[in-house]
Length: 158
Image (cartoon, rainbow, N blue to C red):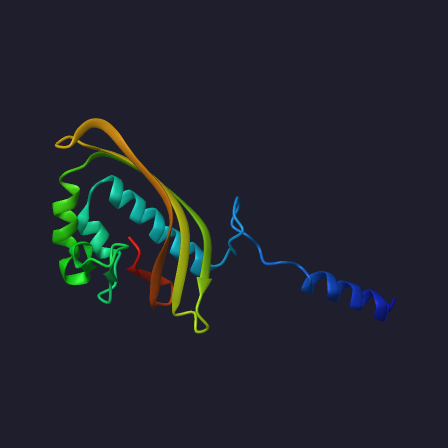
């Protein structure tokens, strides 16, 4: 029995028209790079909640720089000062809870860099400032750099 050429074309169209598989609950493509990037985001969240500047530093690339969202140099960070600056800042907060929702992951044309757009909600206490829980939420972007086949490091946006 021979297959009809129309049947073969139909099968070809069905298999080539399938959209890429998505990570459940998101519009993010399910592939090795997006999974690796989401793993970095999970480690970032855990390190913030643990108030662990060493773990945060290990997630960053030596090219890391961040202007803290302002034009003032007072809140700027770079790789060399990141650990000590975070250690100083994190010692003033307790009970940190961070929720991160990745909205989009975009890659450059060479797939060497990725821009992660995410929303976050963080709550924390600052005992030296107030007994009340503080909270903040916003949408931010984090830049990551591919440093190995499936390894990504943060270059800005923490």
